[in-house]
Image (cartoon, rainbow, N blue to C red; front, side):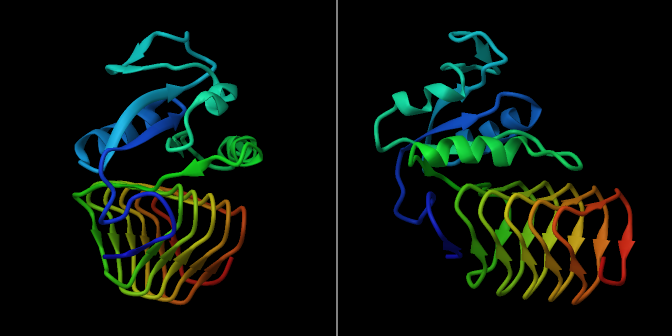
Length: 207
C-alpha cells in the first residue's frame, strides 16, 4: 500500500467525510468517495448554496463555518477546484486548520499508486492517475484524471496536476502550482512555487 499521511488506509471502513465545496470539482470528488467502500459521504459545506438543498444527490449541510458542528470522527476534504492562481483552497484550509479538524485523502480505486509512493493528507487522486515508485504528493493536492507523477518526482502542497499532465522522473513541482491539462514536465526539472504551466506546454528547463 502507498504511504498515506492521514485519512484513507487499508483498514479504514465507513469513514464519514464532508466535502468543502459543491462545484464541479466537488461533484467529481464526491463520485470518488461514493465508489470507494472506505467512505461514507455525509454531504457538502458550501455557503454559496442553500443549506438543505441537494447537489447530485448529496445534501448541502451549511457553509464552511459549520465544519465545527460535526463529531470528532468526521474528516474533511477541500473539494474546491483550482485553475491557475487560485487561493481559495489554501484559505479554506486555514479556516479548518484553525479549528483543529482532520482531513481525509480521497483516492480513486481506479488509479495506480506504487507501494513506495506517498500521498499527503487532504489530497485527491482521480481515476486513471498514476503515481510512480518513490513519488511524493504533498498534502492537499489534486492529481486529476489520467495525470502521471513518475518515479522520484514530487508535487508540493496545494498544487494541481490537471488531466493528462505528466510530471516525469525526478521533477520537483513546488507548492501552489497549476500544471495545465496535457502539459509535460521533463525529467529532473524544477517548477517554482506559484507557477502556472499552460495546457499542453512542454517544460524542459527549470522555471
